[in-house]
Image (cartoon, rainbow, N blue to C red; front, side):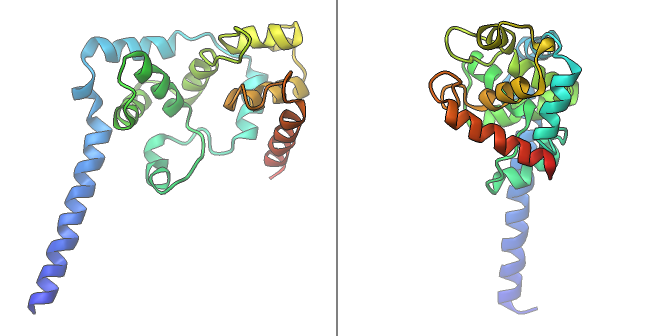
Length: 195
């Protein structure tokens, strides 16, 4: 084997070892970056979050295809810029900030960890129950009462779609300040449902 081939093989092996080590650092790092009590608090926070109505969750899932896929399965595509949603990643980001550890790698570690113990639906419910929707509405239930003067389970599909659209960026898609922007986003969600 000539010298160039040996150097190339060594570089490829070195690169693969770095990739494997980085993946292990992220996939199992929560066991080292977060102590046992922090991990238990994270699991308890997600699992104790109030359930959302099935109709709302089904509509949310229909507007966000692939939402039930795990972060582990979509990790490589996220590294290369995929912007698809992952409820456990959203939950981990919220929890990591609350634990004063909002570093990107810690969010990834916590995401991998959460997915071992909770479902994507539980993470979605946690995230929406902790999203600030503006006007001192600190979760989806308060936002529902504020915007529609109803409970979440009593909303029609159009109202639920508006809330789903607002949930991604409640200030940018604000129903009161930016109704046209919100309407365009709702139309985008409807298009996603058709595909």
